[in-house]
Length: 427
Ligand code: IMP
Image (cartoon, rainbow, N blue to C red; front, side, top):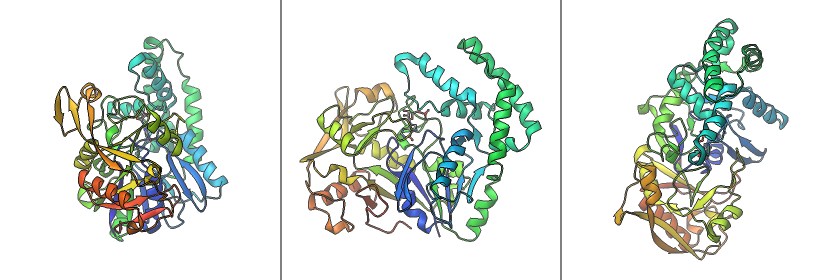
């Protein structure tokens, strides 16, 4: 059975949680590979409605082991809360595994995320303020503390003492904030460690054994390609790679062992937070999409910016991820529109370009060049076969397939598990 990576192909919130929830039925391992609790994966299935932030969306199947991978950062307080909420709804979390290599979000990361954003003033990135950027920065600066360190209290105290002294200097001397108490942070994190100890494990061996048995594995992305720190709208990005390559690293599976890469796109675009978004609609159509699809951040509740499908951005996403297939979600949101637009190029400083510029400043100046298509003005939410879609909806999907370009495997027409059209088998 293959290894499939499920990747956000736009600015996040494409519906990866729903897609993973659907595909996990056939999987034995689901591995969340990057990001932290900045992510918000909405899953609606026969068990209930869930908003997952760290726990992989495969958790609802009793035979699936769910790993929070080495490439993630974990706020233990948030994770414990998430586990408890799942348990209250009778979801068994005994098959959850936390990679001992995953980094921890510490109290100073949360403080620094807020202080750094405030110091950016009008240039704030609009982060989720979950401490994600500072935690990943520490990982690379080698000041990070990993989940496995919670299991050795003595060594943890020494590491924390060293790191906290440095962090307190930044908090007090640069930001004029109060220092954090070593004793308090230590005791609090020891409590988290005790609570999570049963979940924290070395994960490469679990994955190796699953591969040896030929079991189906899903890599669950967080955020989206256009938030990637290298290829996204830097600096308006997140801090870990949401790309398929990030999946290989963050899960601990070599790139040659990933068989398929499924790019998840919304049928239109959304973005939450600051930064360029060439097809953003600041009009009635944008508002209609936001309200019809309830486009508000799962993690922060912020209204999402909505716009037309951007095929230029999709082309970059396809290039850097190497999609073998795509899922188009929320097609039903467009059901009432008389006309649709797809951005096929940009006008930049008087020139027409067909690539996604690397500079955020240039992207801000890009004007979308649109192709217009007639809308289908019919309810697609109960359709389960591609051929049963209205002709204009099929035309729209086929056009996206040509423009990305990538075969479309799956079309979602509503939030629940069964509201899907399988165009080609994904597994
Ligand atoms: P951070 O990841 O919290 O540092 O935020 C950096 C940028 O990524 C901000 O624009 C956030 O709104 C955005 N972002 C982070 N996580 C998500 C997500 O799961 N969905 C959509 N946007 C996200």
